[in-house]
Length: 263
Image (cartoon, rainbow, N blue to C red):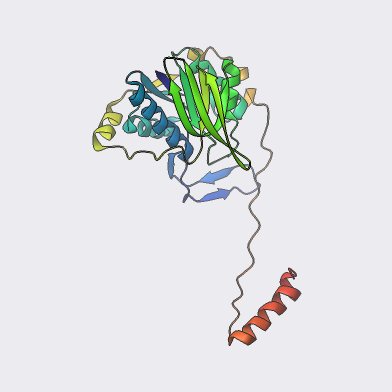
């Protein structure tokens, strides 16, 4: 069972994010980590491989040298190989061109299953996985909370979240699945895995290796453009109502009526 896992390096949840003056870009503190939903996908890939008893898990990402950290985390958890789509022309694009580049890399690999996270914490679009499946011409099932693979029948049965409940779907391999919270509990990489990850050679693919024209990658090939970033509105200062409880309650009600105007 050969499994490809799409991963992404995202800002840590505690990293400071500032909008530049004029809204042209954002500045992110140098704290990054493997996207949480992608860690679920890596864990599930490893469990499926262990269940089947054979195969290979390959983690793939598009990014800069910084993104190598996410790949090494995947290898430390147990992945066999890691691939980085690394070319300045690939940077700055939207979900469409990102998915196109990833699909170009994957189509030359041997794969039975593709796993990815439900969404990335930095943009929360949830579009890259399904787009990759569309470019490859294979089915996809999103927000999976339970996955059962039959290598003999070449099928996968997936339980997924829907509004108000869950549904069970069955699809032939190859298929792309996106992982939702509750699918599993990602393992902590053992020290031997960390040591292996530091020694593992990261395969790098550029535009030429992807056979992708520069006009269909990065900013040049993007279908959408970010015009401006906006800072969230400033929160008003907190007002503390002091005094005995009856008096404080009357003052609070007065403030809610006259200042907050919520009652």
